[in-house]
Image (tube, rainbow, N blue to C red; front, side):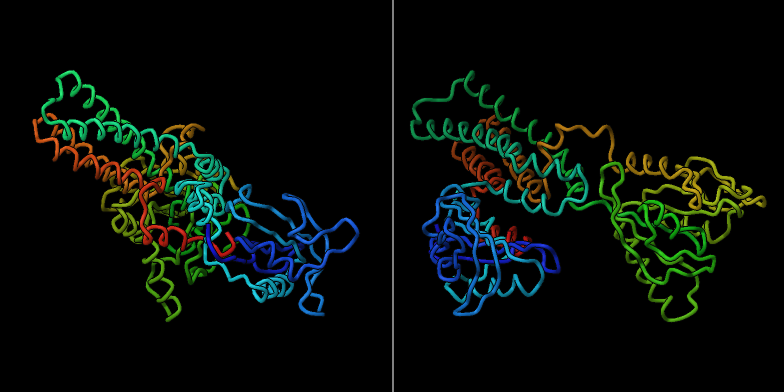
Length: 470
């Protein structure tokens, strides 16, 4: 438990119907008492109210009325932070919430740091570190699949499996240390095989978890896809079709897009960040020079490319240059304007240099999807191909229980390496002291995932990414 009481606005800043100001700490009820004036015969001061009740009244500062509010009273330990907590629901908008918060701070609370409510929930033992990270994932979810994955982690499904792994390593370590303490009793061959079997099973489980890292990161942060092609091929029209609304300006005039445009779309449950880039041609002014520079910068960060081609025109040298420039990237060729007479002939495969007189590529090309951005024909097939490129196989509900993030991945890699060294040491008849050293490293590393092994720097790194009020 902490000695001070924290407060923050828990709802987004801006105009809205309601806003919520949160307090947590040993003096939360007393601080709220100082500025809450109950209204009606059944309404009480927070300190006099039963836990998990709502009181109606007003927030006042001296003689000045601040706002008409509802106050939710929640007493420890049955709260998110396991501390006494108060949530004040006031009118929405920037000023009402700010004035309520200022009044709370003037009466003894301090402004919470980013993620401090969730950090207290972790430090007070209500949730572990993996569950705390799931709170942030839940807030930032951009698709239902990402939301499902965050909910599974928040429910403790990943933590349960990590704790089983840690317990197995701990039991093995305890067995080894017992033999270190009693050196006259050697580990029998049968016992050694059982210990090795347990460690090898742990390795298999870690490999299973590590295979989920890529999918987990896709759901959490999305995957970046750059839309490229020569000017007026239909890049902006394609972006609008994928988003389902007009985001980019569409014009028959080449070079309309002068800057990069980024928008996230839900593609078969996966968050895909599409980047509409300026056509990479010879720039005609300073603005277009900057737009093209930003386009190339975005292209370097993109995980895959949608290369848009004009089906109504033969393949040009400029198109061929795109093939060469981005041949190292995953890509889908999108043949647009298929409602017009087709003059562009391509074959599935790998593109090669050279253009035939009839405008076709001299070698086969990548996966091709025909679309018409004017009518929307082919867009659903393109979404299927994007999903297949990004995510191999079926998306199953049970996957969400164990999807790890990059921090978990790094800790598991260290655990796996230490476990591998332990296995080699046991098989190589190394001294038990050396075996125990690597096992302790593995136990410590896997404990970092759920927070059973932590440092202040690690906690600061995790909770600094949270918003204030959560």
